[in-house]
Length: 397
Ligand SMILES: [Zn+2]
Ligand SMILES: [Zn+2]
Image 1 (cartoon, rainbow, N blue to C red):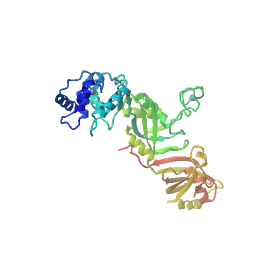
Image 2: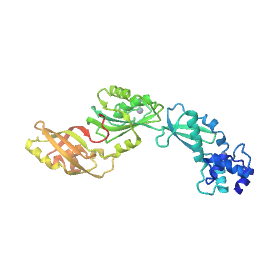
Image 3: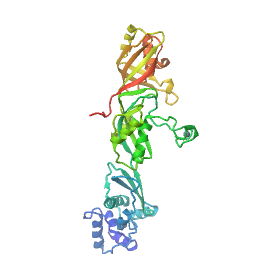
Image 4: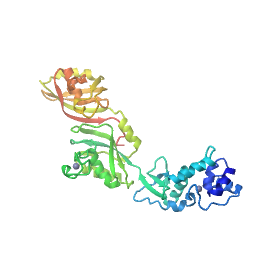
């Protein structure tokens, strides 16, 4: 305490800053501990604290400088960025008197006390677990910036027309809009993500979207049944409370029967991550055509694929964007129905990530075993639909 007395004669120090240096002194908070120590030493009250530059003495005035607009949020976390000068003063304070364990840093102390003030002045809740927004306080110029956390919505989509799943910016302009893309910024005018985001972005006044889904289907494959689970992330939303039922109706009107979203529910980053990393089995229906025709009796041979682990080298058609490696996926069940002399319908349930087109064609020996190999003739998928993605929250009930 002798060191504090010497220090305080040269550099005025406030009760809050004294208190955070003396965690072992009794008192219910820094301010009270600081006052006790100060009175014990017979020090005067500091006019403007050298170590926090008077921040703790002007919390109310500072909190009022925060303008929460244009963002709508209820809960927040606060972070503080110290300027160089305050960092140096903090170092000096710690060196001189803050050598005991449990000393609280200036940053942490500001975050808590200013946080309380913001709650009081603006009626927002401090919530480090689920903050709607992150507020940054810069001691330099005593100003704030507000960063809304993304919004997440869960749904399941059906896709009834050929289109990619995610947004696909124009490759010439990167999405800004140019002559090549008719100033839409889009390489593909229609994607599942665009249909959903085109409605949600204006409603939330968000800046950008990102679709997280449990796998994806080929552009020309339909997604049927009870749809594929997805989470759409809306970045930097200005509005957080939107009518989800109304949004859902608008999405489905916009989707024009090409994209149907079966429900829209509040979601989270965690759910987005689960969907992306989860292993959801899929049920596929393929129309398969074989050169030289196919007989009912021959199709019986396909039974041997059931329960089989299929070894697939990265398909020729996706090799340009994916590393060549071997993947092993199991066929869970398989059934078929002959359509005519040259084609049949195949229903396959498989572990996630099995390439069905290659399971049928064999991809010139890169997939083994395959339908072509087993039947001893060249077969290929004429059309492919996904009937079911097993997993994710249901939309009904
Ligand atoms: Zn201070
Ligand atoms: Zn363009």
